[in-house]
Amino acid sequence: MNSRSLPRRIAVVGGGPVALAAAIGFAKALPEASIEWVPTTVSDAALADRWPLVLPSAQAMLARLDCPPELLLRHGVATPRLATRFLDWSPDGAPWMVGDEPASSPPGIALHQLWLRAETDLPYHALNPVCVAGEAGELDADMQPALHCDASALTQGLASLARQSRVVTARSPLAEVRRGPHGVNGLQLADGRRIATDFVIDATGPDRLVATSDGFERWDDALPYRILSVEAVTAAPSLIDTYRAIDDGWSAHWPGAKATALTHGDGVALAPGRLAMPLRENVLALGEAAVQPGPLGLTGFTLALAGLSLALELLPIGDGMTLLAAEYNRRVNQRADRMRDFLAAHQIGLQPLASAIPPSLAATLAQFKRRGTLPPVDEDSVEREAWIAVLIGQGLRPRRADPIALGVSRDAARRLLADCSGQALAATGKRGA
Image 1 (tube, one colour):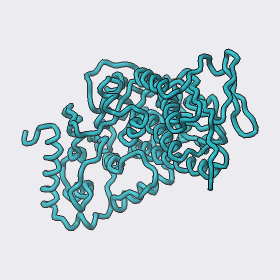
Image 2 (image 1 turned 135 degrees about the horizontal axis):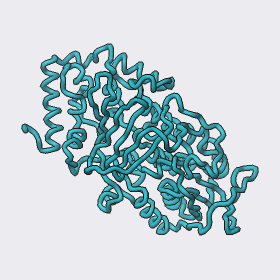
Image 3 (image 1 turned 180 degrees about the horizontal axis):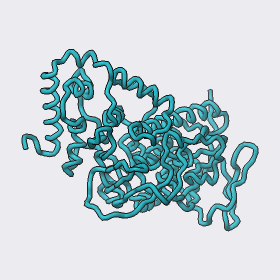
Image 4 (image 1 turned 180 degrees about the vertical axis):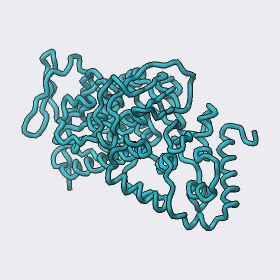
């Protein structure tokens, strides 16, 4: 009979929601282990901690931490986001949108293939109920929005849950990391106390106060934006984030994130990329200590929750877990690379900003340009419909018509699209208006 020797002394280092989520998650998964949280100052470049946005794909992990979306919304910790709008971003200058939930397709045919067949002037996003509802400022109870979380309120809430989950909070800052032949064996605090550890989670963002930066793969060519400045702005509440292409990059407006505006100029330097081995020996890098996707889309917290979920699923830690650790690194890096490709896909029309396309993204683009389809992948935090909306918004059109769509007459395709558009309008109560 196989047996596992799981760690019994776990330290989590970091000052924001990523660290606290990890502490709670491991406390629930390993009730016999002692979990100690060592708070640190949140880095300016730790965007996952400073502007936590949770896509629908990661909300199940939040619920496992006793933070279901409805609770966060009810207590004002989070505000909903239904869609993202892009202005001055397409080759023809037309605005386009990406919904946080996919639109429904007619039976037997992909919605975008039907839209291409119809050759209509109707914008593609007009077929997605969440995009239509977002523009109307209406949130239907059946919709699952993305969540803009207030970083301070989320940190406070998670800290309370951590205490309820037996997580001990260190009372003194980290002073030194003690390393041995098999990884980190202790953390020295400023008050002289030493925390003995079997396993350490580094959630300190790109500072990586515990994890090594060896093998960090830079994504500068694929995601060329490295400087950001942020300011508070006065704006009415909105269910839509807005991005606008400008001469030197792009600007962003996040109404649900404390009315924040982002531009490129003097500000925080970022280094997009990821670690080759986010789990190395007995140290797990999580959040932007493992992967820095940059500010576009605020995807860092979603990736952190996905990494935490996978770590709790595999528990690739302890003696004799070499194969599980390798599997964790493979899968979590595949998800990170897929997010890199998704974010880089937003920039293919913004020449010369898109100076390099990763080979995996090139394969995705080639297949879409040929047939209007996407290759299957094992790990992705983004809905396929969101991918398609981005590529269509960038002006990509397949060279070959879909065989199923060709079996539908153009007039019939337009009638089906009219039905889809009507269903989208029905979500706002504007059918027939």
